[in-house]
Image (cartoon, rainbow, N blue to C red; front, side):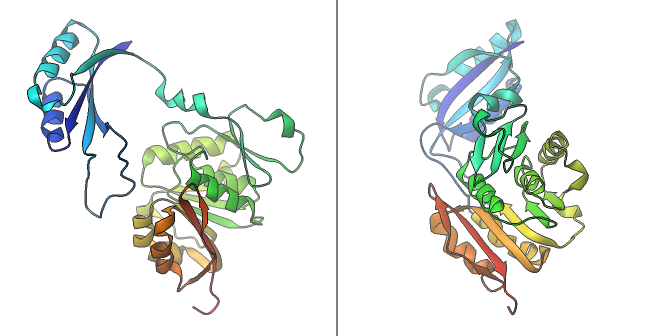
Length: 299
């Protein structure tokens, strides 16, 4: 099945009215994203910001009625559209599989490999030290290619996780929790507020044969089992807000790894944890930082 896709470029102040008009005009789905190169990496607390110029995309059924609705919707914005509306035909695709186009086996640290399911890097397939994680992110984010995830994977690879309990807070696809289990952790606790992420995490754990050692939890329903290693790859604001939660989640000698932090934000995040944890200087990759440390014996 195919769809009709209508794309409009508008000023952010006009976006809410256009979005509402498209929804009321019969669009099956409406999305808003950046029409230029104007990333918003982290909004202020309570804010829902938009880019200065936004691209509004609406999907309609590809039939006579859908064509009529799309044509009417294209005419309705009038002077609010900064560029001529564009209508195209969009073939149906298994969108959850599109990530495979750019996902190849990748090594993090000395021995940890993240691979699409069923793939192995031929040159190291006989390396007895190599640890392989087969990953199918589904619709949840996280293949290890983003610098923040890469930093966390490298950090985990450098730890002795044998027999440890690892907490992955904000687990996404479960890549960090599963990597920890494959690296020798006895138990991993994967926490996320997104039900889709929790499902992807469990599916990926099953594919890697580690589901029996994985605990999947919503943050509002946590069992609060102490963790020897606490890792969180989210954003600076939530990391600061969650500092009491993450500090309390660790054992008396817990290791801590925090990422999702821009390099210039590292000092501010470190301040929220430095009283309880002795932190190393930030490790930086492509303007993103990892903070790591060990709980102080006498905070």
